Every structure is written in C-alpha cells, then in structure tokens.
Image (cartoon, rainbow, N blue to C red; front, top):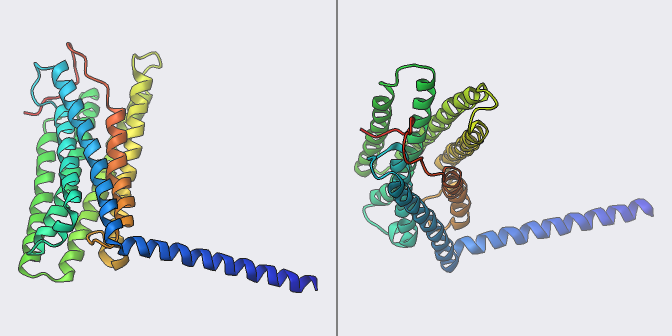
Length: 295
C-alpha cells in the first residue's frame, strides 16, 4: 500500500512538473510570436541603450569641461564611442521591424552588425590603454601598440566588409555561418586581450607597495573591468557559435525577442553600464602623467 501511494505521489509530481514546463514553453512561444510583445521588448531595449548612450555623452562633456586643454584623449574617445555605439543600437531597436523588412537583405546584416563591430573597437581601445600603462611602467617602448591597434581594427573591418559583399553577391546560408563564426573569433580575441593585459596590469598593481596612493582603488577598478569585459566577450563568442548553427538561437529575426533581450542585456547593456560606472572618476586638472592623447 505504502509503495503504491509513493508511486502515485511520484507520478503526480512528475505530471505537475511536466505541466509547468509545458506552460512555460507556451508562454515563451506566445511572447515570441506576438508582434505586440516583440515591439515592446525591442522598444525596452531601445530605451536601455538610449540611457547608456546619454550617460556616456554626459561623462564625455564632464571630462571635456574638466580638462578642455587636452584634445581627443583615450578616455574621451572611449566615452564618445560608447555614446555612438549605444545610440546607433537604440535607433536600430526603435525601427527594428523596419530594419527586418529592408531590401536587399544585406542591409539588415549591415545595420545589425555595425554596432557590434564598433563595440569591439570601443573596448579594444580600453585594452590598448591598459597595454600602454603596463609597458610604460616596465620602461618598455609602446611605439608599436597604436599602429597594432589600428591594423587589427582595419583587418577586422576589411574582412567583415568582404563577407558582406560576398553575401550580397551570393546570399547563401553558408556565408551567414562564416560571418557569424568570424565575429565569434573576434569576440574571443577581445576576451583574451582583456585577460592578458587586464591580468598583467592587475598583477603589476598587486606588487606595488601597500601604502601606494590609490593602489587599492585602481586594483579593484582593473579587476572589475577585466572580469566584466572578459565575461561579456566570452558570452558573445559562445552565443555567436550557437547563432551560426542553430536556428532556435538566431538573433537576427523578429520572433526571438526574449532571446534578443537576454543576449543584448548580458553582452552590451550591462557591461557598458557597469564599466561607465566604474570608470566614472574624472581626470585631475593638471599634472597628469598617464593621460593618453590620440594622435
């Protein structure tokens, strides 16, 4: 009797779990297939990107007012690119349905991919900044860093433009897969860059005397930003791999709004917001020694 009762309870529990899973699946499908919910989620993303863009431009103005005598420093360019990337992404999500209906189809790929490329450039600039600080502290020449930064970015953009042109000329699914895997590789490269130079700078700061002014705060800043950026680019790399081979993980369609929301929140909105907050400190007005200027 007891064993029979246990079996009945077990089967009832399994039935309840199965029912709840079915309900959750139905909810997910209902939201994904609803044009109203699609527009709502895309507009929420647009608002979030717009907020990040405004924060970035406010910080840029504050820096300019603080040190107007300096030109386009690395810090200013970083905030300007954040403003640009998030602003363009906000506009894309405001008009997401119109973007999806654009012809030829290659225009859709370009509008959806350009902000991602610009995001890579923005945070590659942060890696460059850290690399310069690291090598200068070790009395190593940094003359080759900036040419390398521009060369890497030029190669990435040229390859991506070539992929767009081939996709325009011959719109086959294989080229879409190659394009997404290429960007997965770019994201992995960025993640490793943060791990390499963020990790090196973190370890170098750890060796500074404990009483060094600002050591602890700078150590936390580098540690947090390295962890955030490494994680977001690694997630982007993994997601791009799924996106390339699994239609259920396709981000460039209207009927995956929940997936879009989770993805862009994790790989762009939250990382950008956190990094802008962590790097919110204004530079000193005079006598700065490590305030780099873009030539």
